[in-house]
Length: 530
Image (spheres, one colour):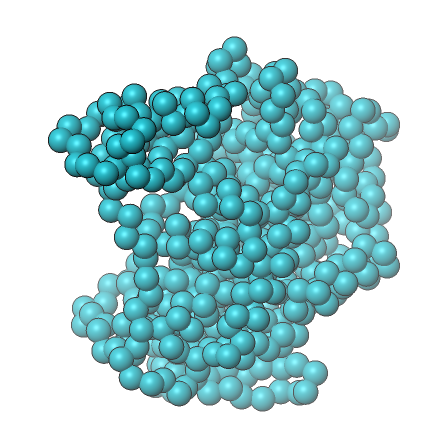
């Protein structure tokens, strides 16, 4: 198979024109080509007067080509496969958390013929949706089932982006699994692939149904404790509507989300080694979707424009946009009573009136005292300040971008209407953000506006606060992905080893591989601590 990389294609090119371009690139006739498969597709909008598509293709030729152009190479398209265990396994592996990390860890273990007990503190997807809607109606927060907790994890209420900076053969495997369980076909090739929260809800349900023969799902169940003996895990203590009980297991995988603060505390008490890590704090910005589309694409008829912006300021801080949701909405992502947290979400169609993105500032351990728990308390402090500033009813504090730059309280909305479902309270966001974050965002906005012209529009809306973009804690693990307790594995965002759906899913599969190797007796004798 030949891989043609980064072909520049006219934005309005027909299939026939693309076929001719492929033939010219390889210097072959259409009769020489046996098959063509789109590998990757993106839009290059850096030059507004010449927007184009950038595409890569796998091409199978009927004859061997002796010489390939510089942008082509022979490619191995062997698909990633999960190894199976040599002998029958009767004791289930416990997986804690049903986000992409836990779900794909369990999926890989099942494919290896290993049974799993998957424990999730939140509810199954349909019940979870009902509880989130109830919160929106009553303003009574369920601390176990919300936008952070429940089947599918926090990513289920997001844009469902499948982009990642990691290079792994497992990425194509994961995309294929998503596609097989209901994702649109373009997740297989789009460079900025996204599923949308509407499709994600169906996919996690379909995956669960397919895994039900080998996985026992325990929803609305909290892991209260870990049982150990001589430094090795022996099981967990769980609590649900049926009361408290012990589940025995010699392999336990914690795929917790970055909001499982009580679980961090429990693991620390049991001697699981951790360290503080950098994270971010900031706000969500909303602009009219048409303004963003025009700023990126002009009048050529394209929509659903995205952006990814970053700058490193003179004060040493990094400021960047994160989880950009075209045609999306801002969601109420609190998981603790008395705090306001925002995040972004969009459906696959991305057809809402606004586009939003996080605008985040880096927070270093020295900002909160370098203690393991201090990062969590730092987050909690500003979440509670936002709750109080907005009136104490889960409304969110908001401010026009222009007023934020001028440091004046907003009193009226402009052309952009906020999408936060519980309403916003206009204020001065400097009252619920650390000073360094305020100064850094103010310095970054003009730079971002040089790249996306509408970014500094006066009527854009900042809504706060966003504190949960990543974990403030990293669970220390060895090269087998075990924690300081033998047999207790840690993975994904909550463990501090991933950032997004794809990297979390990859990490979950990686841990599954370690367990498969362990059961097959293939573990390395020399273990290094990462």
